[in-house]
Image (cartoon, rainbow, N blue to C red; front, side, top):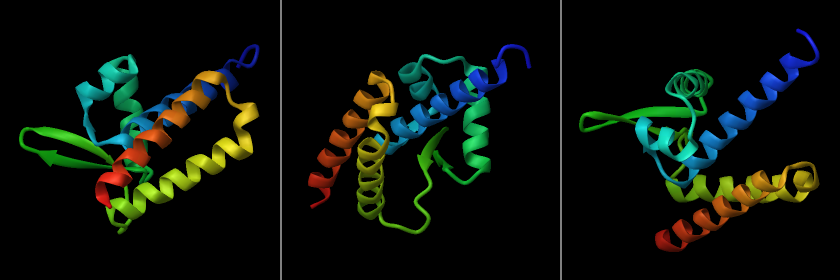
Length: 123
C-alpha cells in the first residue's frame, strides 16, 4: 500500500461499522433506513452489514416483506442489553474521549441519551 492508504481504508471501514452499530443500538432498522441515516453507498452498506452479521454483531430478522437488522443480544433481554451498551459507551467516552473526533464524541453522547430514553420507557 502506498502512503498508508491501507491504514486509512481500515480506519474508514471501522468508523462506518461503528456508525452502523450506533444506529442499530438506538433501534432496529431496515437497509434503506440505514442507508438514508448514514449517507453511504448501497455497496458499502451491504459489505459492512454482511461482515457484521458474519462476525456475530448483528442479526437479520424478517418483518413482513423487509429484513430488519438488529444488534445481536446473545440471550439478554432488550433492557439488559441496552443497559450494557450504555455502560460500554460511557466507558468508551471516559477512557478514549480525548482521542475521538468531536463528531464521534457527539454521536456517542446522542446514542447514550437515546438509550436512556428507551430505558425509562422499559421501567
